[in-house]
Length: 86
Image (cartoon, rainbow, N blue to C red):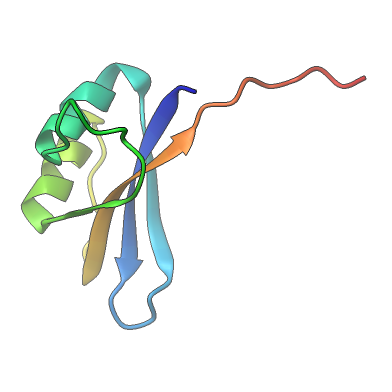
């Protein structure tokens, strides 16, 4: 199973997901390094990020974070191939 990652931000008041930014596969290793995910990790589970870490990840994927009060995470999801309709 190949894991992809996204940078997410949850509004601290409502706890709703308000930011979801895909991290391209070519930037995943850099994002994991910024998030301090060890190479020995299976990569499963959301990793809480500081504002500085979130800004650094946003910078490497060439996105500007919107202003606000958010809890940031680097979240994995499986990269499942698209199956042709039968």
